[in-house]
Amino acid sequence: MELGFIGCGNMAQAMIAGILDHNVMPKEALAASGPTPSKMEKAKEKFGIMTTTNNREAAKAEIVVLSVKPQMYHEVIHEIRDDISKSQLIVTIAAGVTMAQVERQFGKEVKIIRVMPNTPALVGEGMSGMCCNEYVEEEELERVRRIFESFGKVEIVTEDLIDAVVGVSGSSPAYVYMFIEALADAAVMQGIPRNKAYTFAAQSVLGSAKMVLETGEHPGALKDAVCSPAGTTIEAVRVLEEKGMRSAVIEAVAAASEKSRDMGK
Image (cartoon, rainbow, N blue to C red; front, side, top):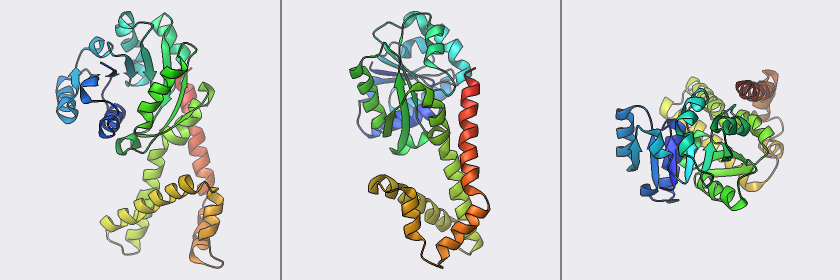
Protein backbone atom coordinates (compact mmCIF):
# COMPACT_ATOMS: atom_id res chain seq x y z
CA MET A 1 0.00 0.00 0.00
CA GLU A 2 1.50 3.30 -1.06
CA LEU A 3 -0.75 5.89 0.54
CA GLY A 4 -2.91 5.63 3.66
CA PHE A 5 -5.25 8.28 5.02
CA ILE A 6 -6.06 8.23 8.70
CA GLY A 7 -9.28 10.20 8.72
CA CYS A 8 -11.55 10.45 5.71
CA GLY A 9 -13.27 13.83 6.02
CA ASN A 10 -13.70 16.60 3.46
CA MET A 11 -10.01 17.37 2.99
CA ALA A 12 -8.95 13.73 2.71
CA GLN A 13 -11.73 13.02 0.22
CA ALA A 14 -10.77 16.06 -1.84
CA MET A 15 -7.19 14.76 -1.98
CA ILE A 16 -8.25 11.20 -2.81
CA ALA A 17 -10.50 12.45 -5.60
CA GLY A 18 -7.68 14.57 -7.02
CA ILE A 19 -5.19 11.71 -6.90
CA LEU A 20 -7.55 9.27 -8.64
CA ASP A 21 -8.93 11.74 -11.17
CA HIS A 22 -5.40 12.64 -12.29
CA ASN A 23 -4.15 9.04 -12.30
CA VAL A 24 -1.32 9.69 -9.84
CA MET A 25 -1.69 6.18 -8.47
CA PRO A 26 -4.25 3.39 -8.85
CA LYS A 27 -7.08 3.01 -6.36
CA GLU A 28 -5.51 -0.25 -5.19
CA ALA A 29 -2.59 1.77 -3.81
CA LEU A 30 -4.80 3.85 -1.51
CA ALA A 31 -6.47 3.14 1.81
CA ALA A 32 -8.40 5.22 4.32
CA SER A 33 -9.55 4.70 7.88
CA GLY A 34 -12.21 6.34 10.00
CA PRO A 35 -14.26 5.57 13.10
CA THR A 36 -17.71 5.29 11.51
CA PRO A 37 -18.40 2.08 9.55
CA SER A 38 -21.22 3.57 7.45
CA LYS A 39 -19.09 6.54 6.38
CA MET A 40 -16.18 4.31 5.47
CA GLU A 41 -18.46 2.08 3.42
CA LYS A 42 -19.68 5.16 1.52
CA ALA A 43 -16.07 6.20 0.86
CA LYS A 44 -15.31 2.71 -0.42
CA GLU A 45 -18.28 2.86 -2.80
CA LYS A 46 -17.37 6.36 -3.94
CA PHE A 47 -13.67 5.86 -4.61
CA GLY A 48 -13.18 2.10 -4.88
CA ILE A 49 -10.31 2.18 -2.37
CA MET A 50 -9.73 -0.04 0.63
CA THR A 51 -11.39 1.39 3.76
CA THR A 52 -11.27 0.32 7.37
CA THR A 53 -12.22 1.45 10.86
CA ASN A 54 -8.80 0.30 12.09
CA ASN A 55 -6.25 3.14 11.94
CA ARG A 56 -3.40 0.68 12.35
CA GLU A 57 -4.30 -0.87 9.00
CA ALA A 58 -4.02 2.49 7.19
CA ALA A 59 -0.75 3.13 9.07
CA LYS A 60 0.92 0.27 7.16
CA ALA A 61 1.21 2.48 4.05
CA GLU A 62 4.53 3.82 2.79
CA ILE A 63 3.09 7.34 3.14
CA VAL A 64 0.67 7.94 6.01
CA VAL A 65 -1.47 11.08 5.90
CA LEU A 66 -2.80 12.24 9.26
CA SER A 67 -6.02 13.85 8.05
CA VAL A 68 -7.83 14.14 11.37
CA LYS A 69 -8.66 17.28 13.31
CA PRO A 70 -5.76 18.82 15.29
CA GLN A 71 -7.31 17.87 18.63
CA MET A 72 -7.31 14.21 17.55
CA TYR A 73 -3.58 14.03 16.75
CA HIS A 74 -2.47 12.92 20.22
CA GLU A 75 -4.98 10.07 20.38
CA VAL A 76 -4.33 8.86 16.83
CA ILE A 77 -0.54 9.04 17.10
CA HIS A 78 -0.64 7.14 20.41
CA GLU A 79 -2.66 4.45 18.62
CA ILE A 80 -0.33 4.00 15.63
CA ARG A 81 3.12 5.01 16.84
CA ASP A 82 4.35 1.46 17.49
CA ASP A 83 3.45 0.54 13.90
CA ILE A 84 5.42 3.38 12.30
CA SER A 85 8.96 2.69 11.13
CA LYS A 86 11.81 5.02 10.19
CA SER A 87 11.29 4.28 6.50
CA GLN A 88 7.71 5.58 6.40
CA LEU A 89 6.69 9.15 5.63
CA ILE A 90 4.21 10.88 7.90
CA VAL A 91 2.28 13.70 6.22
CA THR A 92 0.43 16.10 8.51
CA ILE A 93 -2.20 18.52 7.22
CA ALA A 94 -3.47 20.04 10.47
CA ALA A 95 -3.32 23.73 11.27
CA GLY A 96 -1.52 24.61 14.46
CA VAL A 97 0.37 21.30 14.91
CA THR A 98 4.12 21.66 14.42
CA MET A 99 6.48 18.94 13.23
CA ALA A 100 8.28 19.04 16.58
CA GLN A 101 5.00 18.40 18.39
CA VAL A 102 4.24 15.46 16.12
CA GLU A 103 7.70 13.97 16.64
CA ARG A 104 7.38 14.31 20.42
CA GLN A 105 4.06 12.48 20.32
CA PHE A 106 5.60 9.62 18.33
CA GLY A 107 8.46 9.52 20.85
CA LYS A 108 11.08 8.70 18.22
CA GLU A 109 12.69 9.93 15.03
CA VAL A 110 10.02 10.10 12.35
CA LYS A 111 10.09 11.45 8.80
CA ILE A 112 7.50 14.24 8.79
CA ILE A 113 6.25 16.33 5.90
CA ARG A 114 3.89 19.10 6.93
CA VAL A 115 1.44 20.31 4.31
CA MET A 116 -1.32 22.90 4.37
CA PRO A 117 -3.64 22.11 1.43
CA ASN A 118 -7.09 23.48 0.64
CA THR A 119 -10.37 22.01 -0.57
CA PRO A 120 -10.20 23.15 -4.24
CA ALA A 121 -8.00 20.04 -4.55
CA LEU A 122 -11.34 18.36 -5.28
CA VAL A 123 -11.45 20.05 -8.70
CA GLY A 124 -7.73 19.88 -9.37
CA GLU A 125 -7.05 23.47 -8.33
CA GLY A 126 -5.70 23.10 -4.81
CA MET A 127 -2.96 25.22 -3.27
CA SER A 128 -0.56 23.68 -0.76
CA GLY A 129 2.33 24.95 1.32
CA MET A 130 4.87 22.24 2.22
CA CYS A 131 7.86 21.76 4.51
CA CYS A 132 9.66 18.81 6.11
CA ASN A 133 11.89 17.88 9.02
CA GLU A 134 15.56 16.95 8.85
CA TYR A 135 14.98 13.21 8.45
CA VAL A 136 13.24 13.53 5.08
CA GLU A 137 15.39 12.99 1.99
CA GLU A 138 15.03 15.31 -1.00
CA GLU A 139 13.62 12.58 -3.21
CA GLU A 140 11.04 11.72 -0.53
CA LEU A 141 9.90 15.32 -0.35
CA GLU A 142 9.62 15.37 -4.15
CA ARG A 143 7.57 12.18 -4.06
CA VAL A 144 5.00 13.77 -1.77
CA ARG A 145 5.17 17.02 -3.67
CA ARG A 146 4.20 15.22 -6.88
CA ILE A 147 1.16 13.78 -5.14
CA PHE A 148 -0.05 17.22 -4.09
CA GLU A 149 0.81 18.73 -7.47
CA SER A 150 -1.60 16.24 -9.04
CA PHE A 151 -4.49 18.31 -7.74
CA GLY A 152 -3.07 21.83 -7.70
CA LYS A 153 0.01 23.93 -7.04
CA VAL A 154 2.62 23.48 -4.32
CA GLU A 155 5.12 25.90 -2.81
CA ILE A 156 7.92 24.78 -0.50
CA VAL A 157 8.14 27.09 2.51
CA THR A 158 9.80 27.10 5.91
CA GLU A 159 7.64 25.91 8.76
CA ASP A 160 7.49 29.37 10.35
CA LEU A 161 5.42 30.47 7.32
CA ILE A 162 2.85 27.66 7.51
CA ASP A 163 0.51 29.69 9.75
CA ALA A 164 0.51 32.43 7.14
CA VAL A 165 -0.25 29.80 4.49
CA VAL A 166 -3.29 28.82 6.57
CA GLY A 167 -4.54 32.39 6.36
CA VAL A 168 -3.83 33.07 2.70
CA SER A 169 -4.79 29.74 1.10
CA GLY A 170 -5.83 27.09 3.62
CA SER A 171 -8.80 29.08 4.87
CA SER A 172 -9.27 31.49 1.99
CA PRO A 173 -11.69 29.43 -0.13
CA ALA A 174 -14.29 30.42 2.47
CA TYR A 175 -13.52 34.11 1.89
CA VAL A 176 -13.76 33.64 -1.88
CA TYR A 177 -17.09 31.84 -1.58
CA MET A 178 -18.38 34.75 0.48
CA PHE A 179 -17.21 37.16 -2.23
CA ILE A 180 -18.88 35.10 -4.97
CA GLU A 181 -22.08 34.92 -2.93
CA ALA A 182 -22.02 38.69 -2.41
CA LEU A 183 -21.43 39.30 -6.13
CA ALA A 184 -24.33 37.01 -6.97
CA ASP A 185 -26.61 38.71 -4.44
CA ALA A 186 -25.76 42.04 -6.02
CA ALA A 187 -26.48 40.63 -9.47
CA VAL A 188 -29.87 39.34 -8.31
CA MET A 189 -30.61 42.77 -6.88
CA GLN A 190 -29.91 44.15 -10.36
CA GLY A 191 -32.37 41.68 -11.91
CA ILE A 192 -30.21 38.74 -12.98
CA PRO A 193 -31.77 35.31 -12.16
CA ARG A 194 -30.08 33.54 -9.24
CA ASN A 195 -28.65 30.59 -11.19
CA LYS A 196 -27.15 32.89 -13.82
CA ALA A 197 -25.87 35.25 -11.13
CA TYR A 198 -23.69 32.51 -9.59
CA THR A 199 -22.28 31.65 -13.03
CA PHE A 200 -21.43 35.28 -13.80
CA ALA A 201 -19.80 35.74 -10.39
CA ALA A 202 -17.89 32.45 -10.16
CA GLN A 203 -16.58 32.53 -13.73
CA SER A 204 -15.37 36.10 -13.26
CA VAL A 205 -13.42 35.07 -10.17
CA LEU A 206 -12.00 32.02 -11.95
CA GLY A 207 -10.96 34.02 -15.00
CA SER A 208 -9.41 36.79 -12.95
CA ALA A 209 -7.36 34.27 -10.94
CA LYS A 210 -6.10 32.65 -14.15
CA MET A 211 -5.09 36.07 -15.45
CA VAL A 212 -2.89 36.61 -12.39
CA LEU A 213 -1.28 33.17 -12.64
CA GLU A 214 -0.85 32.95 -16.39
CA THR A 215 0.18 36.50 -17.29
CA GLY A 216 2.53 36.96 -14.34
CA GLU A 217 1.45 40.58 -14.11
CA HIS A 218 0.96 42.36 -10.81
CA PRO A 219 -2.69 42.21 -9.68
CA GLY A 220 -2.65 46.01 -9.37
CA ALA A 221 -1.64 46.38 -13.00
CA LEU A 222 -4.42 44.03 -14.09
CA LYS A 223 -6.87 46.02 -12.00
CA ASP A 224 -5.72 49.28 -13.54
CA ALA A 225 -6.19 47.83 -17.03
CA VAL A 226 -9.91 47.28 -16.31
CA CYS A 227 -10.43 50.78 -14.88
CA SER A 228 -11.21 53.13 -17.75
CA PRO A 229 -11.10 56.88 -16.94
CA ALA A 230 -14.45 58.03 -15.51
CA GLY A 231 -15.82 54.53 -16.11
CA THR A 232 -17.97 52.04 -14.21
CA THR A 233 -15.11 49.94 -12.81
CA ILE A 234 -13.18 52.75 -11.16
CA GLU A 235 -16.44 53.89 -9.57
CA ALA A 236 -16.91 50.43 -8.08
CA VAL A 237 -13.27 50.32 -6.94
CA ARG A 238 -13.76 53.68 -5.21
CA VAL A 239 -16.68 52.26 -3.22
CA LEU A 240 -14.78 49.08 -2.30
CA GLU A 241 -11.89 51.17 -1.00
CA GLU A 242 -14.29 53.44 0.85
CA LYS A 243 -15.93 50.45 2.53
CA GLY A 244 -12.59 48.99 3.58
CA MET A 245 -12.49 45.84 1.47
CA ARG A 246 -8.69 45.71 1.29
CA SER A 247 -8.28 46.21 5.03
CA ALA A 248 -11.00 43.65 5.82
CA VAL A 249 -9.23 40.98 3.76
CA ILE A 250 -5.85 41.75 5.34
CA GLU A 251 -7.35 41.57 8.83
CA ALA A 252 -9.15 38.30 8.00
CA VAL A 253 -5.93 36.62 6.83
CA ALA A 254 -4.10 37.93 9.90
CA ALA A 255 -6.83 36.56 12.19
CA ALA A 256 -6.74 33.10 10.60
CA SER A 257 -2.94 33.00 10.78
CA GLU A 258 -2.93 34.08 14.42
CA LYS A 259 -5.56 31.46 15.29
CA SER A 260 -3.35 28.81 13.70
CA ARG A 261 -0.40 29.96 15.82
CA ASP A 262 -2.52 29.92 18.96
CA MET A 263 -3.68 26.36 18.25
CA GLY A 264 -0.07 25.22 18.39
CA LYS A 265 0.64 26.67 21.83
